[in-house]
Amino acid sequence: MNARYLAPVLLMAMPGALAAQAGGTPAKAHICLAPSSVETASGTAMQAMQAVRETFSSFLTGPTLEVAPLQSRLPSQAIAEAKAANCPFVLLTTLKQVHKGGGGPSLLGRAAAGAVQGGAQSVGGFASSAGAGVAANATSGAAGAAAQNYGSGTQSKDEMTLSTHLENADGKVLVDMTDKRTAQSNGEDMLTPLVEKAATAVANAVSAPAK
Image 1 (tube, one colour):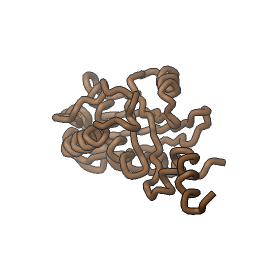
Image 2 (cartoon, rainbow, N blue to C red):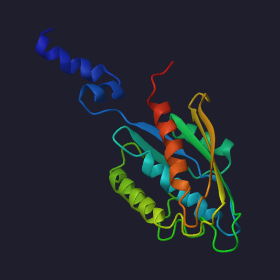
Image 3 (cartoon, helix red, strand yellow):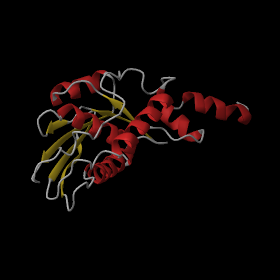
Image 4 (tube, helix red, strand yellow):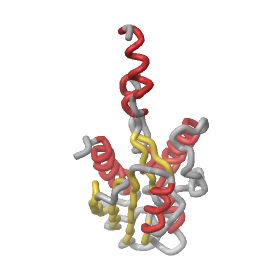
């Protein structure tokens, strides 16, 4: 076969990820994100779940990463939902907030004020959806709006604990970590640094070569 025709033929025969890399565009790692299990002040659970989702999504969206929100709240059902969507990674999180300060609003009571509701988004088609860019921009904007309110109700000595669990499609645990912060002052944003640290571990795990 003529050499000038060989490269196109090889590209057609290559898997999608390798072909994307050969074309200069890195293949994205798709992460299915389950609704966070939360233990917060009464009446703030939904706001906490939304704030966690939007913050993780903002950190895990980029040239080589993409997040798809799941709807199932039970871990076993979230894992099954991810498998049904052929998602290679599923991310489970747990957030606990202990309010130790004197009165005042809870940390996450206003954390997601003005944010875009993401719970009804469908997993199917997230990898190639024409609206993926719009959804990513909306998520980023929502996380930015929420970030302005993260610390609005924080009281000095409040405690926040975030647990992060990442599995691949075979059920292998790639990340299993728990981190805690104690507020040093009123109005301190504890959620963003916790999520950033966890998201960094997740990004490193999904980017690591398979063993």
